[in-house]
Length: 151
Image 1 (cartoon, helix red, strand yellow):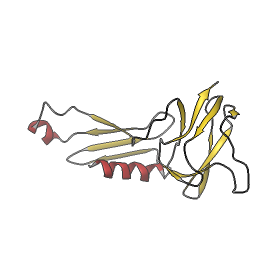
Image 2 (image 1 turned 30 degrees about the vertical axis):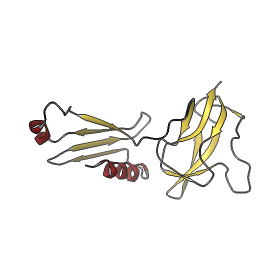
Image 3 (image 1 turned 45 degrees about the vertical axis):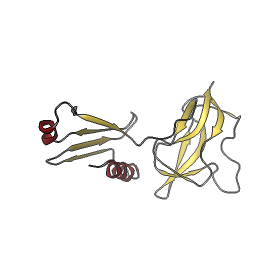
Image 4 (image 1 turned 135 degrees about the horizontal axis):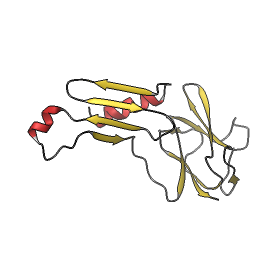
């Protein structure tokens, strides 16, 4: 399976309530599990590839979710693919501003996915250093939403 197909598969799965996906065919096996732990995709290389180039392949191969630009400092990342919103409605003030201290569990933004608005909460007490995404812009799984400083 090519990387672009794998990324599409990850995107499709993160847009649903599926917590575990497994695909097995003659050439490869793919397992995707979602939950509280970091998502990991495991792929076993085709048996044929071992015979052709045994020194170049390692089994099983673990492929992490799509890469994103890493910002300096701690980040709060999007747990899903969707649309980022800084406030509950266009006329309301943002949940969190640069320089603001937020408490653990405080809602800092919304990410809309499949017509559902998911509240994204701070996982620890921190100060917002930078907002990484413009309001109403699409975000990917794992994409940094905020750069923060733990307090």
